[in-house]
Length: 321
Image (tube, one colour):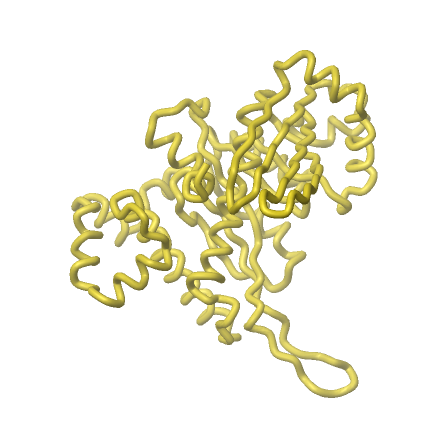
């Protein structure tokens, strides 16, 4: 599977009419701008920390729904809860990393009609350990035999062979705190094994997730689709050099970053009609012949879409209460 298809998995399914049970995938994640902090001399070692941004990203449509500055990384949790509470989430699956796996976060999501899949790590040490112990060799073997809650596939990318395996269990009656986690219906074990085709070296990793859904393939697509927001961050750093941006004024940096996200969405819109063009090569093409490329872009937009772009996305309005 090509990097482009992996990155735009949910968008491609939507375009091709492939069923995703009618859901939209929205991912929540924070980003640190590593070039925006300042170190100060002196014994206290003080300074200005790097700027942080919370992104709520519509993976299905490859559009940033919300991008807000936050004062520090830990503020990502209440900020995510605040803005998710203001959104209509019916028909959406919300994915998030372990930091945002919080009781109040899933409560907000389910209250607003959404489903979720979130990571488990050391931030919930006891919870993580309980789920880890539950997925022992016998449990995994039984899930494989039953097949219904087992999903695996292999893909080749960047000279590596990657096998991804998902085990889902809706047997959560043993978990004493299940009533404290709104909508909780399943635990997921995700194994990834990687083989370097050049050296033959093999590596393996295992992660655990909680979910409000019990369809293993849908959960697997959602967990894999969370890469969409990670890809957003990668593009901002790799193609728009945000980590090299030394603007430390919060509003100025946020405005520049918002323009980058708008440009990135437009580049992604152009990629299907400009086969073989990466985001980087599209940027270069605009530098070399802006008039032609801008004309190509306008052919992809009708009057209604242009009006929405100026006045505010109608899709975004559908998410807001």
